[in-house]
Amino acid sequence: MAPLRRFFTGPTPPKQGAGPSHGESHLFRRAKSVIGLDLGSQALKAVEITMDGPEPVITGFARIELPPEGERAEAVAELLSKGEFRSKQVATSVAGQAVVVRYISMVPMSDSELAQAIRFESDKYLPFDPDEVLLDCHRLDSNGSLEGENGEPQMGVVLVACQKGVVHRQLDDLVVNGLSPVVVDVDVFALGNAWELCEGEQARGEEDVATALVDVGSTRTQINVLRGGETCFSREIGIGGSDMTKATARRLGLEPFEAEAIKRDSGDREVEVGRAIAPVIEDLVSELSLSLDFVENREGVRVDEILLSGGGILAPGFVNAVEQGTGRPTRTWNPLDGLRVDASRVDVEELEACASTLAVAIGLASRVRVA
Image 1 (cartoon, helix red, strand yellow):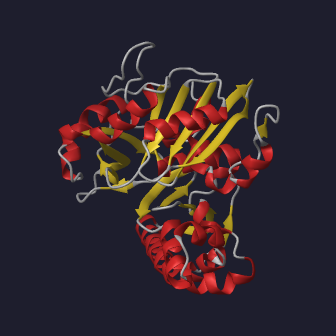
Image 2: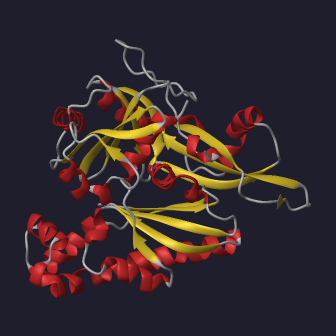
């Protein structure tokens, strides 16, 4: 498993019967089953994966819409009730402006030395006070040979920080529902975990080519570019499916819920919807193309494929627009591919209908494989 697949920003899980503990640690308790909980801005999604020997099996699933102005803790309770999950251990993730990811170079050192040094280095790269964030980092093994300004050897490191308050509030919503948080990850890295779970050894690919995982959510689009199965670039774009919905509502004179429905299933109004959302897609594709050009120039790799997931890709013409706008082969990918589903505990039809939106949740639940 590629090193960054074990990356997480990790608060210490609370002891049974105790309140949440918010200290920093690198800890994952051995678990037979883990729920991957994607706390999206529009919908909550949960996927439970259980290890059957060496094989991961989907043994639970639930999805609910997040009510406007609804309490997140109450929504989590509803989700858990719907899914009837057996496990109480949960992996979740953070995203948005409270999260910062930086790819940096440092002098070669051991992992233990890196863990000590990163606290002193972080203030160069973060817009936050280091005392106000949870930090984590990991060396990147697929960067090749790096050199500093004076020709001295360097190693690549990914640095991640998230404001403590965001992590603590999210943990509180889980603990109050009887869950035991074992990992707080970052959305973009959960995508990589889902892709590795789906593709196995094939996900690692070649060192001189890269694959771009692009997940189009409701309010943001996540990009994770993988080289040799390891991240070399990530970015969050503040454009998503809700922007397409708003554009459709304005152009066609619809209520938001009507616009959302017709965007997903346009029927004989596909041309109208396509025209309404075209400016939004154009802006998103432009940002995506700039990002891929940047990483190719910086890293000296070729992004040879874009793989799309997320609810936003269901908009008419989206996949073709990305392929034409970026000039790169583009396709959707199903994070359920290669995974066995326990049909006695999961509504397979509903699961498959939501498949494109489950990449983050599946990537989080894949933590069950970590020893």
